[in-house]
Amino acid sequence: MWTNSATRFEPRDLAEQLAQRIDALAQQLLPRGTYGQGRRYWRVGSIAGEPGQSLCVRLDGSKRGRWRDYAAGEGGDALDLVAAVACRGHKGAACRWATEWLGLGRIDAGEAQRLKSQAERARELRRRDLGREAERNARDAKKLWLSAAALQPGDAGWRYLASRGSDLEQLPKPPAALRLHPSLWNAESRQYWPALVAAICAPDGRQVNVHRVWLQLQDDQVVTKAPLARPKLSMPGSYAGGCVRLWQGASRKPWRDMPEGETLIAGEGIEDVMPIVCARPEWRACAVLSVSSLASLILPPQVARVIWIAQNDPHGSPAALTLERALRVHREAGRRVGVIRPPAYVKDVAELAERVAEAA
Image (cartoon, rainbow, N blue to C red; front, side, top):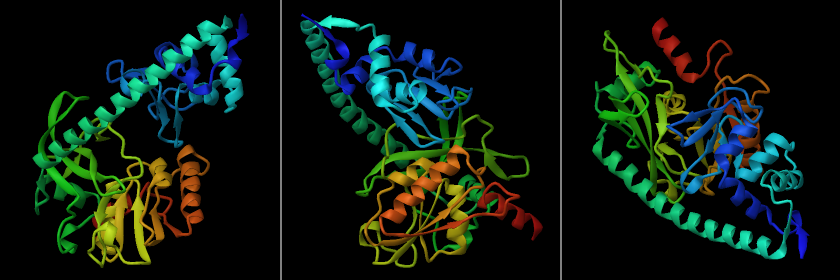
């Protein structure tokens, strides 16, 4: 008995079969992309296909077939990629496209059932692998965190933050979420650099990842980001819903015990948030590390107001549109939402603070 395969396969089955051939699929959909980290990723600017790094497609491992556009805050599985790139976001059209591309055509019911069972087994193996990978990533992150030291006046991390407009001397103590690693391996440059490392916590408070900022000491003793294409990277692993908990505010209480009606300042990078922390230490503060992470940030019910420390992304750009959506999510959750935006002649708050310091 022959049957139209499009009626026999669920979208998740098609997504699994596409994931098995993700290398060829990514190159066909996004031909101007390039490999990243060997052949682990296919990287391109966006779903429009221009050269760049913002959109990343995983080519191997337990996350094979998953993709994420970090600038636009979009992502999903391999079938979602087909929908976004080739079908104007329509999932039904993507199923038909995938059926044709996979060469399924009209197959008999027995073959359809065999392929569905194969896809289910692959999904189960992937779920197990993801669990083991998450545990391994969390252990690696904790190990790195423990190998770093608390910030001290005059060390490279302290001076780097000072160069970005954050005077930690104004605070009663340096943020416990930040540490300095004296010599951390960087795969891009294949050498060791000092690095500012930040603990990333899940919504339940567990440390699940570490964010790294590689540093370089200049001749004038000023510390800057290392001269790398990507001087800032989190370790492998998810931190969905989480953030770097930079400051506890006036209450000095852990997140789970914060008082009702709390104000939280949040920003994309550590350098965006810390100048505000130094100026207004009474506010609780966090860094979410990407604009797209703000929408998924899970906050305790005590947070009544969120103040976002914005960068001057061009109006209508993917980052600006992602921010609008994220702020709307928090408003719809019943929070008051405000935005602190630097003057148009600077990129961000850190650059503004640098200019003020230079003029003083």
